[in-house]
Image (cartoon, chains in turn brown, cyan):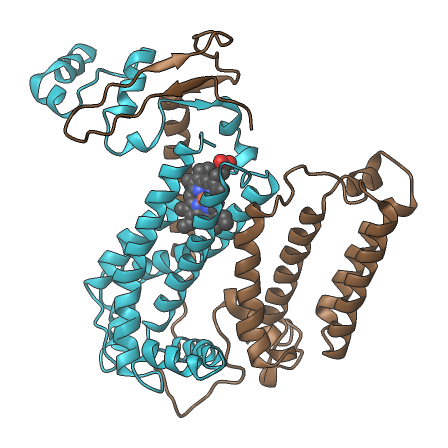
Length: 233
Length: 236
Ligand code: HEM
């Protein structure tokens, strides 16, 4: 660590208002560092935008609320289970997982892993340098990457989770493309500049969107595949 | 006309409420922010870069906006709703057919709740893709993850309250999932949440209290920390 350029004297007597003296060493000049970024006044620039954004949002919500009614079905009846019984849409990705994996995996382990993974993102120097995936030791990276995708694929295959397997393979292709092609520009160049964490997050978002969409639109009685133009449950 | 307003703005009463003058100079613009209770979450100056719409997409701000709409419409709904098995569903029917604008009120609350889940998730994506979780903002990201979980729980506890087939079975699916937590812990959690072994009267009251008091208060506290941290971490 760099040695501090100044030293703050601490006072320890709680009954006396502290007097603080800063000793500034010779090699620093005591002057205010200039702001290096362009700043604007909060009023009106930010507050004005906030008010406008809020108003537009309320208008859109009002229009939607005028034309679309919140659903209200028959009164709750514990005797009569609807088929399928669906959770609200934001849990249908999870419910879709429940269709493939045992409840302990889909309902407990995977959601816990997701939350833990999200929490640790900033602590694992993830994406902090934002270097391309193939920047370091290419050979080693390839081996580890193929092993990881291989293991994941076997698991997904064993549990028949093609809804995750196919997007996983498509994204694997996108990651591998810059390995084989030396192009530095265009789409290949852009793919090559994406970092590991970028790929993990993007894969996660893609899977969430796909599973949730399947749960909302493509699942009918007994959680069987049903086309949305047939009927939406 | 202009004179008239100027007179009001200079009057003793006005100046006792708003200590600053009209925001016409940079000094009064700054005062408009830090003399105002509601605006003082903001710094007096912000980076020009962070104002660009395509940087934040306004998503954090819209999450707050939706929360405000939800608190407002939710409080009004509470005037008409009683959390008991005998009344809950019929109160919803009354909202639809008897209370003036009741259906509209319910719609606003419902759609804003769904939108909030989606918008908060999108806000998380924007923070990730702009790399805005990097030091010194690590802990604010963690607060954010808590807020995401809280937002989903808020929406989910509200889902039971209409007490129709959709609510009842939607919640049953979820609490059955909770039961799969091993070592009997799942059963314990589920019993605690439902106040029994199945979704009934006790569950309705518990979800009501969680939805209208405990979780919103937790959300407000976390939001307070979230915004405070944004400033302490050097702004967006
Ligand atoms: C109820 C939910 C939430 C509300 C109301 C909220 C609100 C906000 C607001 C108003 C900002 C200012 C910048 C902007 O508008 O983008 C912000 C920034 C931020 N939020 Fe959230 N947020 C929520 C959830 C989350 C979540 C789920 C995460 C991540 C997991 C998160 C992480 C952050 C971080 C790290 C910043 C700083 C970004 C920067 O400095 O560029 N927040 N939040």
